[in-house]
Image (tube, rainbow, N blue to C red; front, side, top):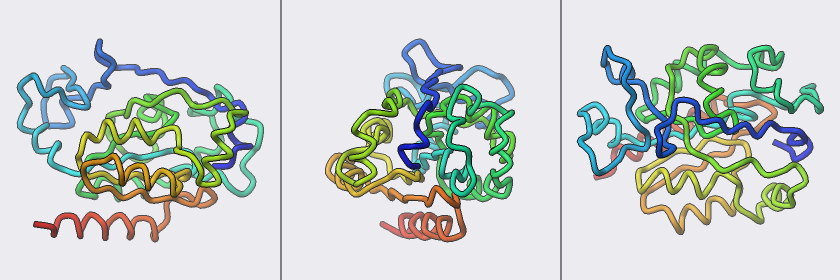
Length: 229
């Protein structure tokens, strides 16, 4: 997404539904449990892990962005509405979301994780439109200010995006796919040097959001990954 669209972007990183140590919680209903006691994500290594969580931990992660990825922001998208009302069900641009994307994402053999400035708001506003369950939320740093020079450097491929280090840390060596409209060559190089596992960093065209081409790229990569010994 262009730097101009970042002006006034809401940096509301509220970890609603998080543990005391800051890790987001995952509803047990996602694992078929009737009670609503939460599971933590990423999972701790010093406590017993439920079988359903162990099974999920063996699957690749898919870090999922919203603006410019699920929600196209090109064309006639307004330039001045990046304020507190953006992450709200009243945002008129939510009509650009495709409900068909939800089932297609759920059909992928991976664990979906929000990796977006929407943070927990993605579960409240985006997930119901797409038919997604409540998903875990990656812990991210604050969105840089609109006048931060890192935006220009990142757009030119000369510096890391603001999410990159956090996502690699939270992947903790697990294979992952990252779908985002701001991925650049610096991100790919840094992940290649610092991530112990394999990863697909796939840049989505913010003008169109996810397309058939993007789903094909992810599906093919996951298929190749599953075929590895």
